[in-house]
View: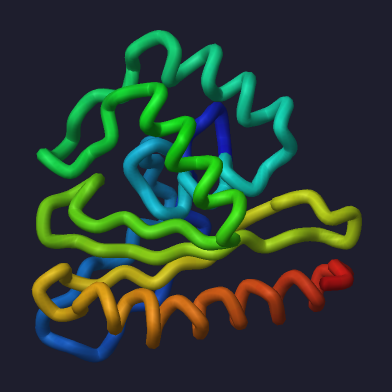
Length: 154
């Protein structure tokens, strides 16, 4: 969920593998470099996106966390428009080197984005094709099911 333009992780499940990304319950991360944050801000009402742009990205607070982090506010706004149009977001090594993530929005009965769900994996274990062609449809489908449970009519 979004809190003060940060992503707050509410829950998570760790896979039964030796190499895992870890569960980040309770942790706060920046919006601009996480798939969860990008989908939460990208799919929210325009006014909230504008407020984010005014308070965070326009102030130059898009600090590089890795070489892949989008730090240019104009490029970030353009990227968020893409996220809004496609209904999911991807983070490939933007928040943490070696970590990839894909996220989709969860809507309530009024059609407002109230949360997002994601799947993270070590970058070396998942190709772009696997992330976008295999994992993404499952994440989007799960987010749509959860949205329906919250009363959203898709």
